[in-house]
Image (cartoon, rainbow, N blue to C red; front, side, top):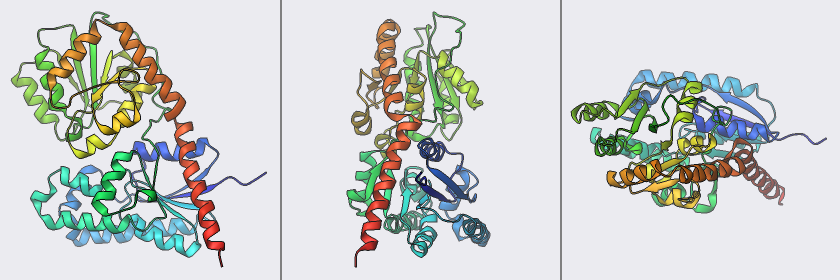
Length: 388
């Protein structure tokens, strides 16, 4: 019997973040032994934003970094032999240490970039707090992208942006779609209290990418259609503004719900007639296919999201989901009114998305794609290192 591939997943990556859970479990589903060598550096999104905005200058942060990487190195000493070193998301700092460790063991290094922290900082207005901080982040990411043997990304549109921004070659990247964690998101049967209500669901972190104000404006336009009801689940930087607008417009067709346990979230998704994706016009929103799109497809629910090159490349409108213009609430209004009276259309597209997810983007298939990239890299590096 041949030994299974052994992967060391390394760094201060967000262990509970969906991207990392999906990538690690996908490999394990395909027989890969994944050893997690992980230490927590970041204490949430607000912490990362604070540090990026100038908190990195404080001596306390430097001490925190040194202690974290000391613990990480101690863990690494216990890992033993492995075939490839992988840095999880986010890993802009981790890849510098990982590069040295991989060189010392003559093992290939892979980094799942997934999202640019420079772009995130720019979208969150970090330039207004000082251009030096933004320049440092861009410079850090510029050099970080040059260290691994292979870079992983989720869409070709994001690869193009990274190549333009950091002057990289596209052949250094391989794609692994975002997918969903189908240990959590899978079809569930629930009873609805009122079949006359057409339920429209948004859930997420209320960030600019999602364009929540667009959803609120849509609800305002549909006030005269009481059968269409909206529920917005979650929390984040734009929730206060959404609540303010809902109160200003006196919206009786919108319910706000705080974050709920994932098991309860799946039941809310299951009772929805339509689930909403992302409608923001930020670069990040246009270049990604958000987790929630795959998650809702995995539950067999129809999704409406803002049109974008990334969505067009990955999914087919009218077959796997519906898309509409991002800058026009009336486009979403018309689509919702149409779907409310066409349940067979909703069912057909929901089934199309469901079939596509479980045949292409579930943990098993996503992990197989990821594994293929790792094996190809290992074979290439072995040939290179064996050359005289």
